[in-house]
Length: 135
Length: 135
DNA sequence: TTAATTCCTACTAAATTACTCTGATTTAAA
DNA sequence: TTTAAATCAGAGTAATTTAGTAGGAATTAA
Image 1 (cartoon, rainbow over the protein chains, first blue to last red):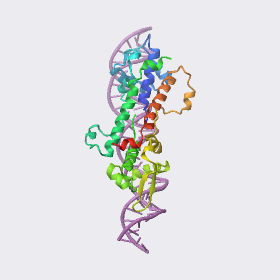
Image 2: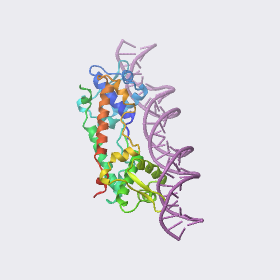
Image 3: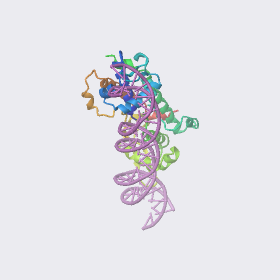
Image 4: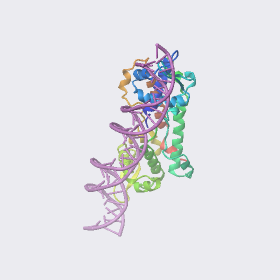
């Protein structure tokens, strides 16, 4: 199981914003240079970050992005959710689980994957952007 | 981030073995039917499970596979490792981390991904095959 | 008016996943 | 001794997903 660049880049970009956008909006060109992520790719990510109200934008020259709430109120899970970085331990729909009787091996491992989901998502729920950048 | 079928199927197959191979070896055909996994795919997985000494094989008619150690001594991490289901939160090599100075955003998130790695791998280290099948 | 920027959609190349296919080898049982 | 059920082994392939690129439209400070 691996993390995609989408999620990784989104967190890096948000950490960059948290570090540099205190006084003025930060342009994606700046982030692109600092973090070595393609500008066009960042643009796509920020559309979603904006939709999720994690960042706000200023258009035009001298424009850019800034956090839309304090870094202390943004969880990693918020960022991942915004860019559709999902934790998926099953590829079937949750509904298919209903079909299981409690004795089948399939169902036994379903319980394992459910716990794994909870375990991983719990991690993302408990880390805030602020913690990343302080220190 | 998502779990691949390789890892999921390997755990399902091992749970099946743990449930059914107490007295006689279990053929992959049986597992294939019970778990609805293609025979040819299972064959590939079991080559690796055998190399890692998690299962032993009996060739020929009436042959099959059985656990090579008690289910209480097999961790999920052992199974994942056997079939190369890896947890990868970075796509770069670990060495590149050395290049980081502690102030860069890149390095800050590196620490996060390292913790995530540890968090997920810890889960797999702490669940044994036995726990899956009892109850 | 210009240039720097966000915004938007479609497309594409590369990588990975999830298999299939073919055939060899082994061995219990008829 | 033959047959059929099984493991063993490697190569090939189709489908999906990822990781971008490309091309422009809209906005706005200077």
